[in-house]
Length: 345
Image (cartoon, rainbow, N blue to C red):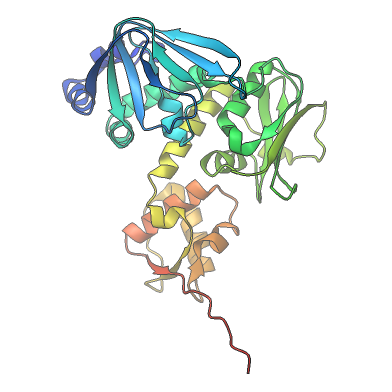
């Protein structure tokens, strides 16, 4: 039976096969909470996803000075919350408290991520619905979707929320990301709220978007300006052709997939070298990338960061290929040797 992505969580459970349903239920725990209980506070670290089994909860955001609060949504049976911060690794962007005695199902972060991998229909359900629920996590610090010009420090904002804010505003203009040294490191052009062009680091188009999502800048600033044309033209052959909800949902999935890459590879502070003279490769979707990497390491081991910057894909696409090359024994991972300081003669 097809999954209804607009259904609530418990309707989804009824549509799963028995094995998948058991997998979901085995990694969840039930908690009973009194009315007025704070489940988590704005700014708390995120390590749990919650499903409302009965009762109601309400989400609030607080202004930076703590003097103002605003209700951003009430959730009832079948609604879920806390997933965005868990998947993106960002702090909680709102406070959530019970409105009345409430029962919750909760999933710890590691168990939740593994469940999404083991039960694809549940992963698809969360990804599709997440795009529609991002507004529940916007805070007073995240400017209103009706603002004309947006600006702020990147350390205080989640990039997907910034994307969602601009999409919801339906404005035409350009978002710029600046490094801590005020260098432009990324630009994204929107037409009536639809993200159509992107440039980030050395990448353009969709891969630039995925790179910004999986390894977002943690320092610097952003600014969105209303304008009819970008400051610098983008290549038309790299125009982004994704509907906004699909882009947001896939962005969450991309970040989740990036976190599944082994940590030693994600850091890109190791080298790889060939183990054979010829490449043996059976995975057609990644063949071109594997052959490019194989060519670049022909003469000597190469650092992953250096290799990636000579490709035209996001770190996720690159590292997934590298991980497959390691898994099937085509390449060997080597720890980078520390630089040796030369002593004066």
